[in-house]
Length: 79
Image (cartoon, rainbow, N blue to C red; front, side, top):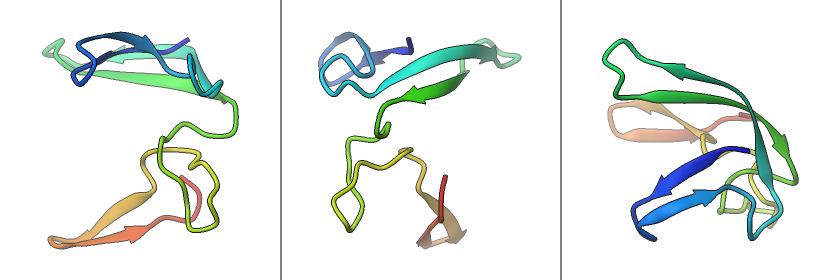
């Protein structure tokens, strides 16, 4: 399962420990400078984000908006 460093908690945490919405780790990609990671995951619950949409549903992803212009964010249909 995907585990992250929480700056607010100052500890490692595994996504889903409290919500049940785990992220099953498929692959970890490392950039050329070895200072950034991309986790490829399979969601194991209702969603991955701690926020909810207008209907009150847990968002599938935290990446539900895109930058449309230098100062405008727009919602994407299904991230």
